[in-house]
Length: 73
Image 1: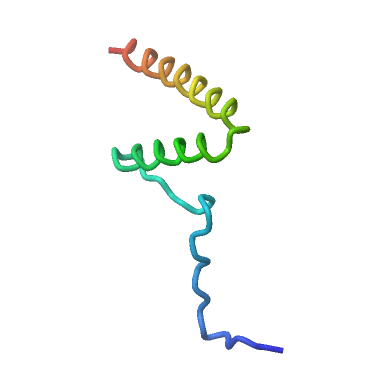
Image 2: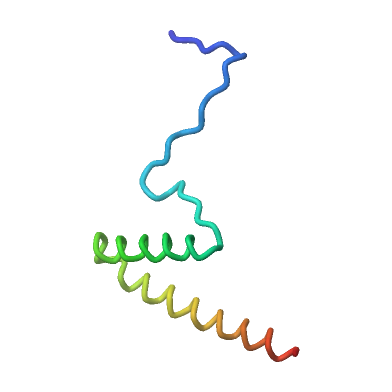
């Protein structure tokens, strides 16, 4: 049996697939997010309905939040 000394720290797991990718809230993050959506659109045809629904719901929520924000001015 292999034992690891307690003083030795374990390294974090390497990035695998898209599950561990963090995307910042900047323009670069928007480009990365758009790229991931395009890849998912091409690679996973079954997910297209989900992607369209998510984008549509995000648009509606974003417009409502923008309207509520600007209404206060």
